[in-house]
Length: 469
Image 1 (spheres, rainbow, N blue to C red):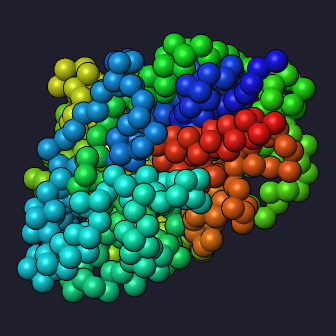
Image 2: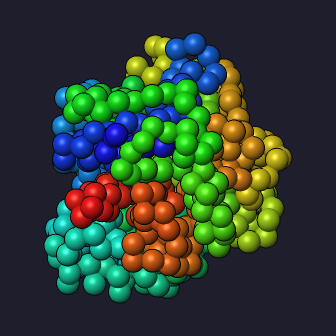
């Protein structure tokens, strides 16, 4: 009998398996697809030699992850590559606000009225970022906080809606960039705890940047897999699980799946019936004949570029997708240009480029023209550089990854109490009514992102259960 079986070889499932194998337990991972990766994969989606990330591409949470930082993943080929600027947010006049490793440079890009405000906002947290990140990403508490006072202060600033926090800024340059940071959660800006989302992304960028993995996001999953195998764990691909009896006997079963799939496979009935899935995205991957011709020079040297001129534009786009059930006419775009940092991702002189806009759950329309009109506003001539494109709306995203119910790449709405208390209102979110069944996907705390912390936290819960038995 195995000690633990993990269902799903995404970053969280692999991290859970590694954490248990490091403790000397026998572990096997079962993955339905023919390769590991989940939301961290790399494929030739357009043309030969152009390597795209079908989902995650830039990794501010990955490089800052306490779980990943405690593992020797660099020995297994994981290398983080940085652009000159982690992120840029261009405006129609050709200027841009930036998220730089330097707080001073970031603040200066907002203008004189808000520079001091921004410095005061991040100053209490940045020197204590590592302890704060570990405490925040371990919520609900699996260990005592390392710095409870800083965590409490962060909660006071971040738990109100981001719209409250942004009242501190006088000009829209700062509000627009911060709104874009919050929008990574694919939830309206006025939701509970959205201030914390924006702060986490800003602090992560200042602390260690927003890098890509050399060779693509698949490198993260491959490094975790290689490390797991060295620890004695096994990984089985092309192995779809429909019920628990499909798995070998084990003391614990850990699911890197949606709550819906877990309930179906483990026979939990309606246990997760109140779990909410959120809005989706329409994603485009481009093979380009040259770099994106951004008007703003800062955007040309940034790894991630937010495209949506003002905070009201961003709020309207999110509101349309999340609350009105329609695709926005002028979508807010999150874009990544990996080949700015990693030329190996495309043939010489060519580039790969990644963009998505928000759409309602299950939406089956085509946002391509709206996305490219928006890109042309800030990068005139963009369409002339397109060699090929690959598109994926909610149905395609759900078909690629069963965790993306309705195309929700966050594996559950990141809004309301579900921002932190997911997938149930429970102090033990990784456990289920079945004493041997656990959940470790992004549907559990701390939520979406390629950071492995949901798997790390779930592994602790499994370890405690096994040790007590």
